[in-house]
Image (cartoon, rainbow, N blue to C red; front, side):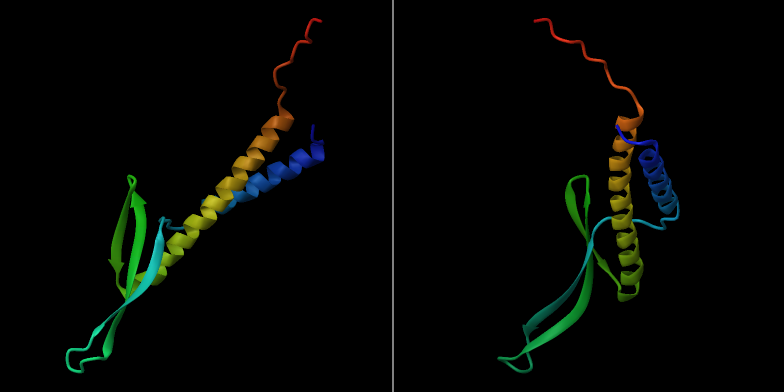
Length: 117
């Protein structure tokens, strides 16, 4: 059983994480990939020509992978939303762990009977 001081520390940390979540801006899942395409240069055989960079946002929707092409101007906003999502998930994971600690140490479980011998 945890001390009262530990319980209060866990509750304060949980409250700080909840406040942090309340300030979270736009969130989207996924990854942004920068791609370039190299093709043979038709005007100079034997040499290649690079096209790009192109930006692709990939995410899961109903179990399927979806890829969306982004304009260069969209990349910063989408990456910020992806970073927000990752911070939110990390905060939620910590909140779940803290919640379990708090509940296990502040509530009484089932009293077990002693076995007859």
